[in-house]
Image 1 (cartoon, rainbow, N blue to C red):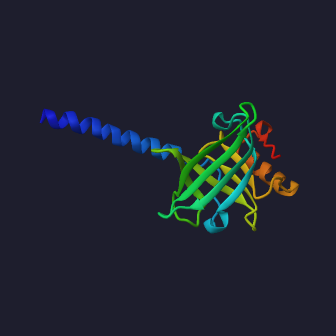
Image 2 (cartoon, rainbow, N blue to C red):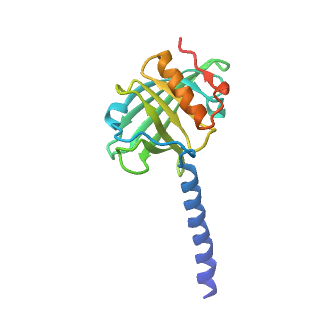
Image 3 (spheres, one colour):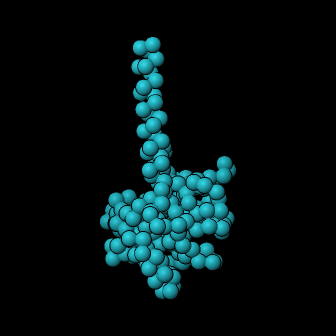
Length: 179
């Protein structure tokens, strides 16, 4: 019996910790709603990062792109690429995304270091899938993406208003250079 407890307790605590870690990291900010009737096929392809907060993993990066493609197992390959203008070198990260619920809801979880997952929620997108507002699991993570290197002012204002309403400090956004 003592041997069973020595094994069962740590394994149980590990499983509980893993479930807590997984459930906390793939949420959506309070008040935000992921796009419904989402068409993941139309979302695939190359996106230019227009704006973001200053994240450690994207520090000093310009010319940032994200390319999404379908993996054979149905998950989505995430290929992020950017130019570190301080180190004068290109950097790339490859990850994987999965839908949290149904594929028609733009709530995903993304991982670049399994088993650690983070929320990836498309909360606004134009009808032609040319511009998207993406947030993480809290108001610390936000991206404005576009199929082009610039975004129309009307879309920019719409995305900024939505982000501000959710509690994002849009004054802290970094507007990414593409040259």
